[in-house]
Image 1 (cartoon, rainbow, N blue to C red):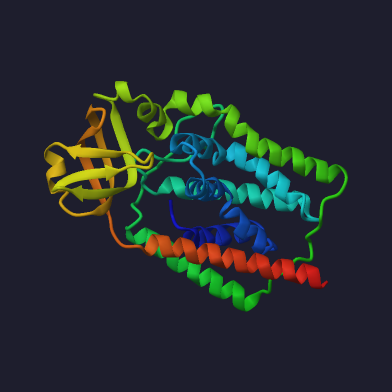
Image 2: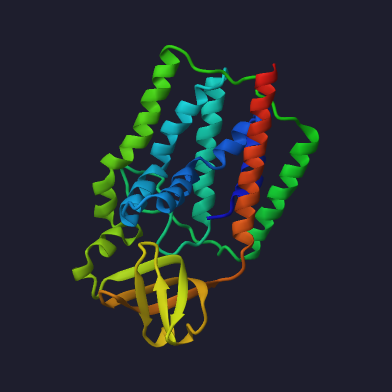
Length: 299
């Protein structure tokens, strides 16, 4: 997926074209809502011993458009302008997912129509290292600079929900957290991110596997894929002969044994600009919201 900085650039431009008075803090929030499950996945894996596959299954369904809309509705209740804010957050979540779908992801994609259609959407127009991604990053920097000069963070519309609104927030947030649990079986049945394939170790041989941005290790001169489940899988076959140095790669192949993958295609991912663009974008969002909340407190 494009880094957060890229989302800020294009989503701000498109949102302001549709709604010139759109509050920048809500635009920023809409840029990251579908990413919150993936950020949460990293935190949960870092601080708990929960099975990585179960965490991934939960994040897949929680990052879908339908489940993201539950969070949009809950957050909109913290504004006096509930209707416009909900529409901004919903549009932001949709734009985020569509932008993610433009970038090539091996064995990955976005869920636009779940729970009615569990096929991943991925248009695959460019790789993370392609010039298009750098253009998005530059646009994001330009937007942040422009907005910072022309506008100031404001919390004037922020409120603390009470009575019926507070109850609605609790119900919506509970649904946001609980619905992905109910959708677990659908994610497994669709084998999204190959979760069913990876769960059923004994039936892996001859099944295909696609891995997006996986770590390649070289151990005793042999290429090893350190996949997101925590497993290490041997990369084999003629195509794997070019894997001679540690790297980050996207891989397609099929299992020959439960722990060996015959590689059929490889894409290398170089540098760390994508990671830093995400860190910068997240920091900008946190700072803008911090100053917005401070403005609200001081009023």
